[in-house]
Amino acid sequence: MTDIEIAHSVEPKHIREVAEKINVKESDLEYYGSQKAKLPLELIEEEKVQQSNLILVTAITPTPPGEGKTTSSIGLSDGLNQIGKKSVVVLREPSLGPVFGIKGGAAGGGWSQVIPMVDINLHFTGDFHAIGMANNLLAALIDNNIQSRNRSLGIDPRTVIWKRCMDMNDRALRNIVAALGGKTGGVPRETGFNITAASEIMAILCLCKNMDDLQRMCGEIYIGDTFEGNPVYAKDLKAEGAMAVLLKDAIKPNLVQTLEGNPAIIHGGPFANIAQGTNSIIATKMGMSLGDYVVTEAGFAADLGAEKFLNIKCRKANISPKAVVIVATIRALKYHGGKALNEITKEDLTALEKGIPNLEKHIEAIQSFGLAVVVSVNTFSSDTDAEKELLYKHCEKLGIPVALSSGWADGGKGCIDLAQKVVTAAEGNSSKFKPSYELEDQPLVKIEKICKNIYGANGVELSAKAKNQLKRFEDLGYGNLPVCMAKTEKSLSDNEKLKGRPTNFNIHIREFEIAAGAGFIVPIAGNMLRMPGLPQIPSAESIKMNNAGNILGLF
Image (tube, rainbow, N blue to C red; front, side):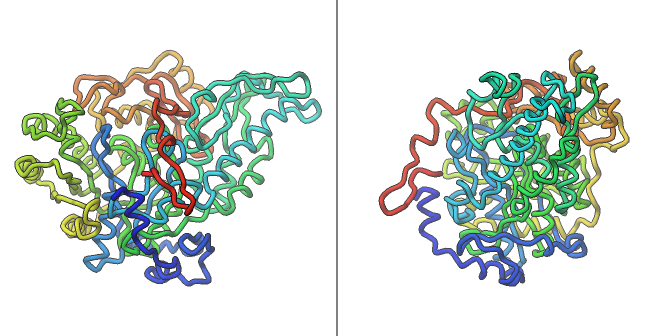
């Protein structure tokens, strides 16, 4: 069966039954039908947060077939519940862009899914819509102020960096000219659209601690300069209050369930190659307040999502994983070892051996934080016994626990060995992670430490434009912020063509951006798209609904 057929084959529990498993009273649930509910922030208890076992799931460098990180996260949480642990899985919300584009849905797969799968992949509880509206309210207020004569802040339209957003892949909106139509249409200027997942509002929602913090962070958004060269912030437009009001429901995490009826919290969805790539601090702390074990994931590989999860999110939230699971597949490692994409299902021990250094580098990256590592080999029917044995023995040689997991085919049962090894790793760890850099380090020093220790680069090179921008941000007092690296997810380097474990390379920073509201500096390596385009054959072409109301083709 397809993922959607499997999802429809399971009779879901009423969400109040799922809530009972984690001792949430029905009166605390804000229902969105019988299978979804919002959770109040008052359920977060800091004492319980510090006692819970947080497990981070990351992966090797992504390949076109995918590694199954979300599937593995859901399967692991179900597996932990099967061995008697009170586990909650906490995930990001899918964006409509990839759903209708090339990637498809993001609710797991096979027998390791969260449901209602269709709702989660579509509008869900409206969080993305609210984020987009808050983003676009600020954009409207900016253009209104530029147009105004009586209350103008003197904003130079040429310096405005704030863009509108929408939750869809639409390359035609990347760069546009707005405010055409004469005097009543506003002051024409160049601008564009980002996808909602790339909006700074998304990053803020996922890093705020409560409503007051959310409103404050919205006010700190840097939007551009005056004609005199002075910075302008959202608070100068008195925008933060109305923006926060639009997010009053979106700030609350969403409770759903896995196919096995176990609790799942889904909230927020920032990109990992240009933002922090993890669900919200609020959702993670909610899970840690309600479960003894919390399984969460970070976008893409350890060099992007996991690094930001630790250096940005965990630092602000004062939390630390007890163990990190690195998901790998044999076919992906063969791809990193030089095997052609159309041949990765064929046995090739040589290609597998050549690809394993990619896994090794991600293991080293996580170990640099002082954290325990468990390797999860997400298995496929094409994997041979010889290939499994080779990878298994290599991990054992490195002294790293490894488990073959089959959550897609077998659900929680297929992840019991992984769950047991994760419990062993978590119980053996009592120390907190060690950040890659100190906030007091100069921004360039922070970048160098990430590039050398996490990516394996020789050094960092800044363009003349990047140097000038960095000096400007340091002069504005942002030198002590963490850095949120923006680079390709397809390689450990900034060149997506370099597979495996590249060596003897530098990271080239083309320019910098500031996310003053979210609280980080963004060094940009290469040309990072904040508004993706649709592929030649979009997934949207295969999605339809029949007269019975069943949606088909959503994977």
